[in-house]
Image (cartoon, rainbow, N blue to C red; front, top):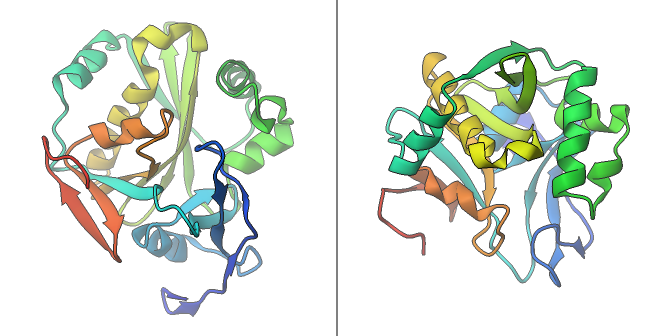
Length: 242
């Protein structure tokens, strides 16, 4: 694949267990990790529906399933729904601070609490500090850790990449005891605001998966654009994806 004037080799993984849909097999198309990724190439891959996990830039390419759909929010056109406005108001007492993509013990403790509460059946709950940081950051990537503070307590962290045309929401973790505050939704709303402030066009949300409870929520941020058939298709409020 030619990206930003460069030729990038792509590889297809062997079938492996799907992380989101039980009893299904998945294949992953990924950029050669030895290719020397840079931000220009990464931004272009995002525009082709790819995603980042650590230093790996990838996209699902499953033989018998096409539920993973890359989505992005056009931030200037975004209008929050009533429940999203309520969530923002409910969390008006939370302050946002920016932190560089470096290891922080407080972040890691919160990450451990979150993954053990939400993902105790997977490897994430037992990640070492090195594994944690290599999952969320990459040496070539411009990344921000957005901290959410309630008084003197760190209650959430949203990891986002800053590209030429948008932010890319990598991962969010938060205090599992504060589920009533809907901090995951708040993190998306705050990243949309940040993208607007930076003069960027989009917030990339990764993959929407209709039949996955963990991933289906992304379609609620409207208007939203879906990567399908080699292009971005915009869905307006009230329109269901086909």
